[in-house]
Length: 565
Image (cartoon, rainbow, N blue to C red; front, top):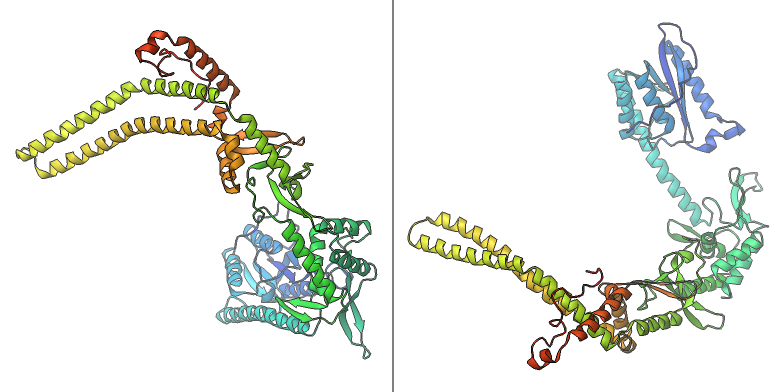
């Protein structure tokens, strides 16, 4: 048990005890808020009775209660009660002889908490005393304490079992456990013998609105959100309580109301349905029709995990940045219209005002985009020539490092041969041979991987660039011929995100390497580079058969493209 922080305000003493008088603290508790407020008073009846019994016990001990701690409406099944925590802190900071409780079960109702609290009091030098039970620090008193604590735990556990059994029996008889749902009132009546009984009755103010809501939704012409707005405009509010005023229902409360079988006369307790004794608010056939409409609406407009589309996960709202989710809206004639809607607006996580857009219109926008970015064969050759030239230049700049790696490989292989010859000549023992061979093989492996990386990276970059340029040269035609699965792959290759603004214009975040290949500056540099390369061609070079490559006809300096990877 972790005690709560001590109070920051000064502790108020109940009395100013004479010098040398033993000091005590009093702990009082009731389990429920109803007990604490019973009789219309601030403390009910139990708290004053416990206070008086604890005061008399303190007088019998020759002690004075200097501080009182009260947990009103706190169950003893939990140890983190506010005033209990403050009492533990108080006795640690003040010299107190006794902690007086009315009964042991006021302090704890399970053995683990009882032992923890008792040890905390003992460490502070405080003796636990019961006003109604003969417990103290003697062996017999400790035995009685243990017995009473065990009895309290048994009572608590057994009470929960008996409560569940009683509530199950009540539900089986058609009774309502707890607060009745909106549209009904919990009331107390007396039978012909004068005995009081608790039952439920229809709420004259709210029951007609609930009945209308079920019948209206069963027609299939309303959504839950529209029904909620209409009920709010008609004045449906929650039932007021002494602490909470009446207020309009939430949309989730309306949905929960429509799915509650209580309104057709059933009582559900612990997952089991019973025939209720209360008056049904709607006929069973209306309630089942409502469930059918709810299921149909859920199937027509559900989460994107169910409605699949090849653009899902790529399209985003240009106003708030949320994903656009698939939603199938059905009109009263049964026609289904697929839309993209802003997930932020749909879940009310954002203040987005982005309206729904037909999926067909979004598909056309993406197709038009591919038409706009498709490059001509001349631009493809210009980009390929400039970028291949750049690769060649970067590769030539690393020639020195590659030469050094090759020399290191040759040296290690030669060293390996000499080592074997020395071993065959019995110049070195087997253990030394093995150790040196392991070292050489490790270094050779590292050098070979570096050499392979040089050649592999260069070859992979060339192949990847050519594939990307080929796709970009024919992207519109390829995309038009693709099925939905391949269109998804194509979009994933080209885009990281596509934003659709309020005016239905696209803002695209391209994937690598297309972010570089579609960069206007790089495209302009490529065209300039190609024009300079054409000027560099001479008849002599063409007739000799040397330097016919576009890359080889540019001088070593070349034309460096704009910054890109």
